[in-house]
Image 1 (cartoon, rainbow, N blue to C red):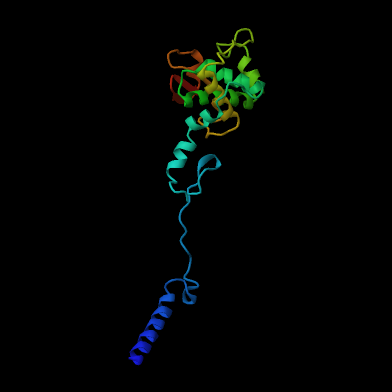
Image 2 (spheres, rainbow, N blue to C red):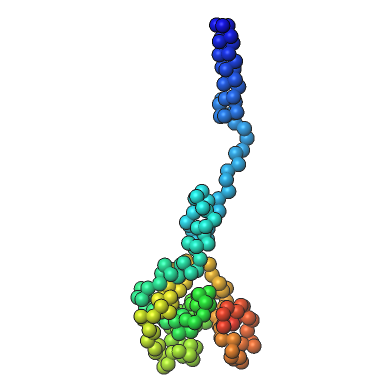
Length: 201
C-alpha cells in the first residue's frame, strides 16, 4: 500500500514538473517574439486604448462631429475672432448639415491663412462684397437664444481648435449655393459638394 502511495506521489511530481514547461516555468523563459493584441489609434488623440470592455463602441460616438460640436455648443463665444467665425457659420450655413457648417468655417480660416485675403477671421468675414449677410462692414445680430446659434459656436470652436479632421484642403477659398451660378465659379476647380454648397479651389 505504501509503495502504491509513493509511486502515485512520484508520478504526480513528475507530471507537475513537466507541466510547468507549458505554463510559464523556467523551460519557457523565451519562446521568441510575443504577439501583442492590436490597438486601435483614434483620430484626435484619444479615448480608448483598444483594451476597453467595448472598444469598438467608443470611437464612433465619442469622436463624431455631432459629439464634438455638441460638447462645444454654448451661447457665448470666447473672443472676437470666434464670434466672427460663428456668425459666418450661423448666417451662411445654419440650415446645412454639420459637415457643411464646418466646411464654411474652414473656407473662412483658409482665406485668413492664404495671404490673399485679410489675415484675421473678422477681416475675412467683413471684407467688402464677400459675404451677403454683411452690410457695410456690419453683421446682423444672430438669435443667441436659438439652438442654431449654439451649434454655430460649437462648430467655430471645433474648427479653430482643430478638434475634427479637416474636410477641405487649404486651397479651398470659395463656395456658393447650388441654386445659383456665379460667373467666377466657371474659372475655378470644384473641390466638393456638401449639402447645398459647392466648394472651389
